Length: 499
Image (cartoon, rainbow, N blue to C red):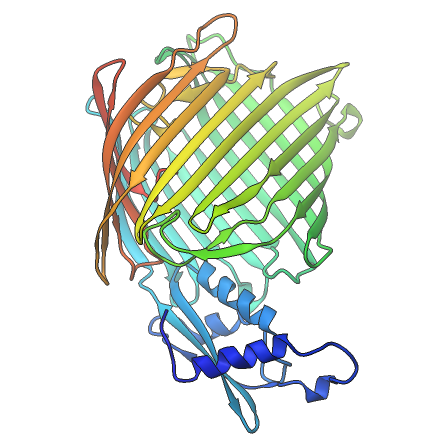
């Protein structure tokens, strides 16, 4: 941590405020007030982008809780690194100095994955602080081995006209379809926010393929158009209780390709639903857990999410059923250097006296920091489909947790994955961090009563390159893995940790 001559005074000052006894003896006029706020460290970012994230203003009573949450909000901005808020007691009031590390926000990354005879490659250009106003811009081009060329443009304005409202637009098109979306929303920007709302419009078209042992069985065109509107309220302080209402309208059309006989039935769905989230917000400051060194606000608070809705012919839908979804996400701080995340999810439809479209999944991820800058990551996951409305399947391969095999090498209605990855950090410099990875991936995909669960594994090695001065240490990842069952190599290059 960087220190400042006023930091010790500020820390003691905050402690004194926290220890003030409650009661009428301390009227609001007697409490310390903020006289002035100074922003330091900006080079590429407009000062207003930082000021609009502050949860306090000149004239406010000093509140240590809002100071801590402001630091978290600023660190969430990918173009801001270290954040320090220091206090100086002056005769006219408290002077607050907000010091930020203004990172470079632009990068160009290659995208390469697959085997020698089936390569997908491309590039993505990113700017997380477009025009210095905190806007996000992403431009990507790919030549996908199976579906052909694909281009994507995404623009996000997180603070429309410096308000709490956000706007996101996506335009994407390729040889086999498109994916367009427009979202206007007011998300929860602070823990004290009492409501969030928004609406979105989307249009997607893609070629769906069904495989068996890596071989294409059938394919069909899937076109989806629709929209969604939602409203969420928030109650509570230490524990957040957030009920919500949502309405989604969608129209989906399927077209079988010439020579392929299968395509699901067309459907129109109008789905009102209600939901509930119970969440205990809790954070831990740490490093070298998920990423390559930046200060992380690791979420260690657990949550529970429930949703119920219905679809009915009388509303214009093609059939009548009710839907259920539940998610439980416990979070644990095992030790001061280790963390565990569990996620349990189930969803289903019920109509005509029976359950169908049942999806169940369970995953557990654990991170252990070793020494100052090394870590160990573990992941296990299980998923199941049952009585699906369509001929859905779970695929397993390079992009699904098994780096030594082709992306669609295994399929079924059950899938299990085990990953272990040692992440030693080799070199740390102000402008780059070089790390490596030694991993073993194991997994299986199968269909009960028709195909056995044969576990396959692939050991491998990888390189991780991070740039601490570029939008919060993006990780350029390169992996090569060996599929033990087939004796083949597969490699991939991309952004971010594998898990």
